[in-house]
Image (cartoon, rainbow, N blue to C red; front, side, top):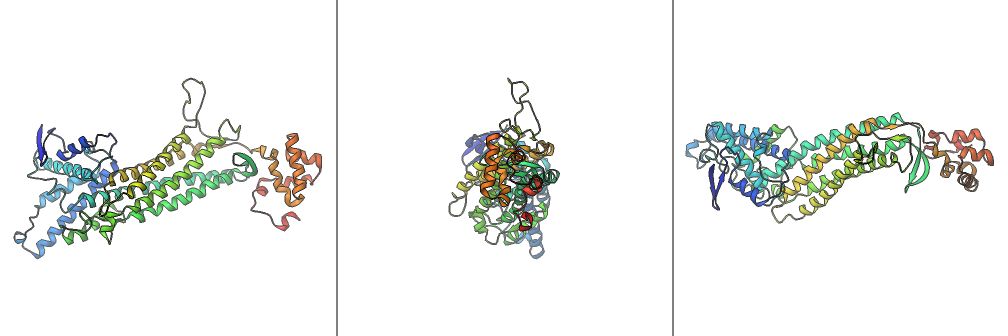
Length: 477
């Protein structure tokens, strides 16, 4: 065991642990088991590496104009800068995640996140220098790993970096699902389907019309999600504690976001008003609102599929894939587990939306202390949506089957709506009443009542005629 201390006292830590006293205190203070998001952890590593790169360039620029020995700032040696870069890259690659012991839900505006990463980087660097973890006189979590940084600019910047990475994945996932739905739309063009409003039979439609509604909704989702990165691309890195850059070289402030942009390959920019970017988190509310809109569309789509394929509707035309045994007591039972999974996921997203909105409003003056919970909820929603899109595509839509026309549409009295331009409301109503009373199709009813020529009726009742956008006078001549 090794002993680490701060002004509050001492803590014993395992010799090979890369975390330190500040991480241990946080774990003790925040005893929940919810794991911190891996993408955010990796983004913290990349942000730290950008800071070390900017530090190295600041040292080089200073040496070209000054004798470094005459400056009040004591620069690290070049070897230490390179070791810090390497340690930060290890974090950016996801290494040492098992040493990140701070949970997702916490207090302190993210200081525990920053310090856990600082300790991992410092101790990893110490090992690279053939020193033991905890020998902070050689590499210090504050003096070295946190150089020219604050929790209040590194943690939110890393959150935006992680969000942009996941947004790219979500955008791809939505587009893949939309493409598959578009294939269904083309595959089942003009295939008759009974339409429904308020869970009651309505005028006829077609399966391609149904799939087109999902295709268009997903297209809107894709477009909205593609714009989300624009909303969060401005970062406050270099702003320090409250965005004023106090205690930070101007060279570093101007350079560090450029370094992060190069390392990440993402279009990040430094916010012109660093204090605004530090104090206000409304951009997260805006982005999550887009995620919620997509969640709504996914719920509507899978709920429709579940209903159409259910035993309640007695619809033998549409069936969703059978994925697993549905009961431990009822043999042969299959449940719609994919729609249920998606609906469960999107309702977690709805609850996250309330949490994010409420906590973003809890920002106080120059900082929002709830960035850990806000960020965790936002990243969770992103991952839930990525996974939901993947599961719908792989486990439901790709193998969805529609077999034949839904001919009961011709037995529904509302189909006579198509005849009102030809017969008028009252004659069409007689046909509908006969259909309802005798439980026959529109064709059988017309044979009895002889209200319209049978050949003309057959032409009007073609699926492509039923879904026309209105009619012209030439159509009814």
